[in-house]
Length: 380
Image (cartoon, rainbow, N blue to C red; front, top):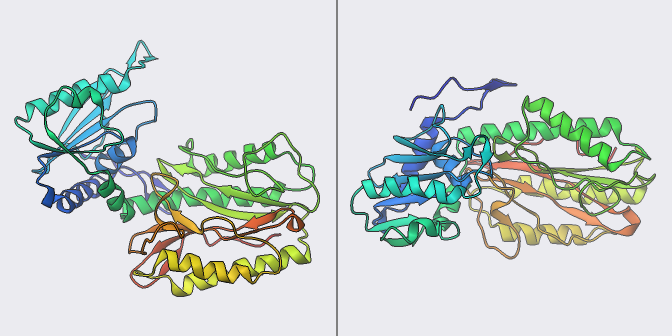
């Protein structure tokens, strides 16, 4: 199917469905799994359908896609065929009756999926996502099943140009949110008011509704959702924002002094966190151990006179808020070209009221990293 003209927003970023990029991902996945001798690959998670075929479907729908070994892709879409998709065959299922959403979305979608599989003839080995492959299909279609979900997540690590464009757009929303936050945050403002105004700033930047929202909007705390509470003089307001644009997430954090005047202790803690970013930008390149970086940062932050660092250092972002690579001692990942990841060092202590977390988003390049969120990091 032919794609319509790409959407162009801001700096003429191409943000529509890129059929060519989806086709490239389909071929990359088939090549990665060629030693499995699969006749077809079935995906049923909405994120994986989007990654392979292009259209983004809301959580309330149950699309599916079948990628055959010969490179053909069949898409199962709710209600009607999309305007653009990297698909050779599009089937639909009735997701709504007289505008009422059906509760048996997956069962209805699976009937169309079964039709595609049966028409394909004898399929002996199917690659499927073990966590979501529907019993509606497995109980009625006989084939040896191979779990290809881990490989899908591995493939999603390397972001293509169309994905990076959407992530950049998502991040531009957080930049506008922080600009608004610095305008309005002062002692006595409600956390709910901050939340509402920041969401509106991102919506205006995107020119459309968010497809995901952020994380932490609680002032004077390590994190948490916005509360019916007013900010207090002397607090640090940690805003960890993760809006999503057309399914792709941003995730960066800033800490803002509520009264505009950080204390000497708060300012000194900030300098130690900034050392982390300088270190990361100096040492991270393809092949660098994520676990090793985490341990190096622990040592940097241990030297701070006040504050503890009790959480991960960061994680990948994309169609899900937390993806590989994991900057965490519980994994042993290695940075690779095409990774888009966050770095979020923090220091927390009651004397810091209650602390700070600063977070940037980075793209791993052939020679190092590019900071995708190079906007203001100061506490005031």
